Every structure is written in structure tokens, then in C-alpha cells.
Length: 297
Ligand SMILES: Nc1ncnc2c1ncn2[C@@H]1O[C@H](COP(=O)(O)OP(=O)(O)OP(=O)(O)O)[C@@H](O)[C@H]1O
Ligand SMILES: [Mg+2]
Picture (cartoon, rainbow, N blue to C red):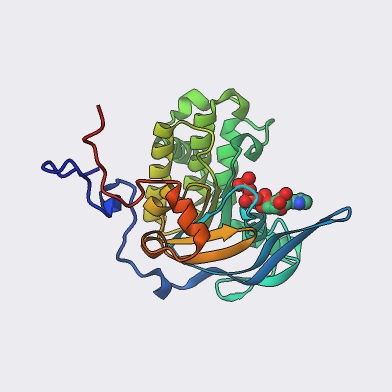
């Protein structure tokens, strides 16, 4: 963070000085559409109770854009993620992929769609097959990307590169099972998988929830480097509006299943219109005020 030596304060819009900041000047609305949705709705019926988890949401996510979906617990973020991933059907409305209605009506079409979209979930433990050794977790990624016929040495080199990208040593992981790793290591392994898979779209549902603040910044940094290197579209789901402000190009604010506000990150945060957005921002008192370090001992 760049601090003004005279005033001891950071600039008002201090995101540019954060290592994992995004290119603020890029206008993603000019990029091709990647995923979009029209009136996407999901209703759950349990017994006599009806819950509208996602309620007529509209969105346009462009190629290479980093979008954060921000909302409190129960606002419908995971339900929307599952629909974007094709794990859950919308009750009504339509999802478009590259501007065309998404068709995942057959197993083959679904598998084709899943080649382009990958997810990192809140709980990394749920993301792995516990009976699969880590070598196999990574080998699967290479195979999925058409590397089945590569030589053993080539595959080894790719796995080593992926591990070193996330500061893991492949030699220390071989022959281990995912449950033998720490939460932080496991989360890094998830990023190593994404490094190998290089998906067109990455959906990350609170991927840093299980780790401490320092590792969290490292993981985000890795994720954003990967985005910058590969040009993938990242959909980041979080409770944390401050974090969303720092890393995103666009922000969608979700309340009770609806998008109450959306737009470029700085517009939403510096000039919020919806009362809910204002409340979320007021919970993070220093989000766009100068940092006063004079009170820090
Ligand atoms: N399978 C289901 N059956 C019935 N209700 C569900 C189901 N999945 C989600 N819901 C309900 O839909 C609403 C939205 O849940 P969702 O998990 O999408 O919220 P969320 O924003 O991801 O919350 P969190 O931040 O806690 O992860 C909640 O009221 C939840 O209870
Ligand atoms: Mg959730």
C-alpha cells in the first residue's frame, strides 16, 4: 500500500497500489459475452414451504472480466452458482453461453460445457475424491485438457510447474491423499488444478474462507495472476464487499435472491444507490476513506 509520507495516508482510491488490483481502465463491456442470464429464477419447494432463492436476476459477464457477487448469507449466491455451473436447473428464465441459449440437455453437451467452466468451492474437502491420491487429482486435469498421450516426463513437468505456481512442492505431495493436506495446502492445490485446466470461466465460491488473512491474500494473488495470464473470466462469490472492491472489475449486489445493484466496481462502491449496498459498505468503515495510520501504535 502506498502511503503519503507527509499525511501518513493512503490515496483515496487506493486499489491501484494493491498488488492484486485489476486493470481499472479496461472496458469489459466491449469484450464478447461469456455468460449471461435473463430473469433467472430458482424456487425450492420443501413440504409446504416455498423459497425463491434466486429471483429474476439479469446479468452479463464478459470475457476476461472479474465479477464479484456480493451478498449476505442466504441471499442466493450458491444457488445461482450451481445454476451457472449447470448443476441445478433454473425454475424459469434462461442462461446464455457465449451469447447463445445454453444447451446442456444431454450428458455429452454437459461434459462439453464443463470443459469450459470450473469451480472452487467454500469447502475444499468436498472438492476432491478422498480415495484419489494427489498425483491422480493433477493427472486427471492433464488428461482432461487432452494430455493423455503425453510422456510421463512431460506430465511430471506440468504437475511440478502447477505446484510451484502455488508454492507447493510436488515431491512432498506425491503419494499423499487430499485429507493429509492442511486446509491452506488444499486450497492451493485447487488453484494448481485450475492452472492445469485453464478453464474459460472460473467460479470461486468464497475460496478463501478456510484460511488465515495472510494466506488468503496469497491465494487471491495467485488467482488474479492466473486470470491475467490466461484471460479467463472469474466469478467470485463473497460476503466481503471490501475484498470485492479491491479485486473486481464489476460487482453485483445480491439481496434476498435479487440483484439490487450492479455495475463497475468503483461506481457501485463509491456511488452506491441501493440502501442494502450502502449498509454493506457502512459495515466496512474504511473502504474508501483515506487510511489514517496516526492512531496505529
Ligand atoms: N436444496 C435446497 N432446498 C431448499 N432450500 C434451499 C436449497 N438450497 C438453498 N436453499 C435456500 O435458498 C436460500 C439461498 O441459499 P444459498 O445457499 O443460495 O445462499 P448463499 O447466499 O450461498 O448463502 P451463504 O453465504 O451462507 O453460503 C436460502 O434460504 C436456503 O435456505
Ligand atoms: Mg453459499
